Image 1 (cartoon, helix red, strand yellow):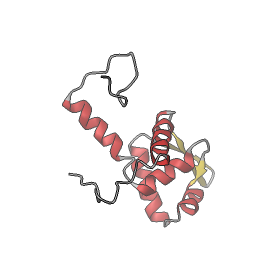
Image 2 (cartoon, one colour; image 1 turned 120 degrees about the vertical axis):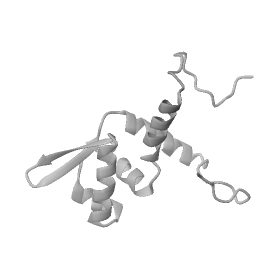
Image 3 (cartoon, one colour; image 1 turned 180 degrees about the vertical axis):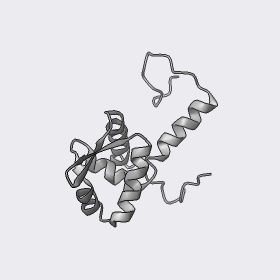
Image 4 (cartoon, one colour; image 1 turned 60 degrees about the horizontal axis):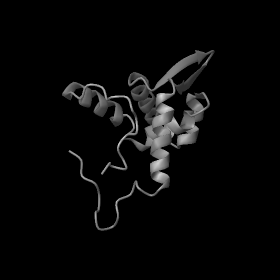
Length: 123
């Protein structure tokens, strides 16, 4: 019986090696922060200034700036300066596709463990 959650691609997967898994885990960790997810969500389809991102996130300038730096260094967003303003945008379509999957997953109520499971443990 085929797993209903198995990828439906007919393209063979790339090499499944420890370095590939480590690189994938590092990329996924960029999405493992609520403030970063909020920033990425605000950037879907529209460039935004640092001030807009601070206002929209409800965080301090320092906290948002720190997350913007992490996302920039991680290759998910890019920045450009226009006079005195700095604008941020998603770097390519991959981040938007991942966000769409996360949002669809959450919309189905699959993001929260049931009361019997409690919190998910990570190592």
